Image 1 (cartoon, rainbow, N blue to C red):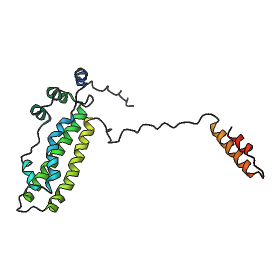
Image 2: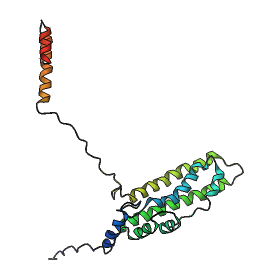
Image 3: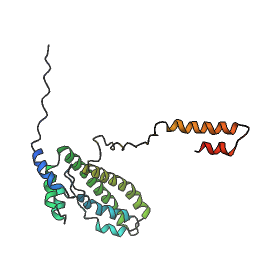
Length: 212
């Protein structure tokens, strides 16, 4: 008979103590205390997204977008005026492994979608008289995909989704309960009213008595 071995304990995360120390420094900053990530990184992508939103009607504006290239999280903050840039870089290095892996994967997908869109648009915008309809046919679905990636990255940064992508359960609604005996009292009152009006003779005193 083969004896079933006991399950080995989960390996200890040696960096959790470092995270606990750094987490205290994140309070009051724009860096999420759970994911250790900051949405300021998305500004690098938002710039080109804004240009794409205007490109169908203003193809010339894409001249500002052709040189766009992905940059790493750390490089973005090194170049930025973000107040806590050094802390943001240090926090990224300590971000929980699963969160950082999901974040990096989505960022790579977002960068790829933008580069593909720019490559498709460039020859169309280079035409003597770019057709807005043809540009929109490329831009509209591309922007939908790009913005889906941005939304997913936001969710990762703020830890707003479960692993399955489910939304957090809604807050339970508070239903006010009727006071004991109130429902029966209201029913009795209605029965009294019905009985009164079924009577052949109704006096004003009878009606007033119902509301006393």
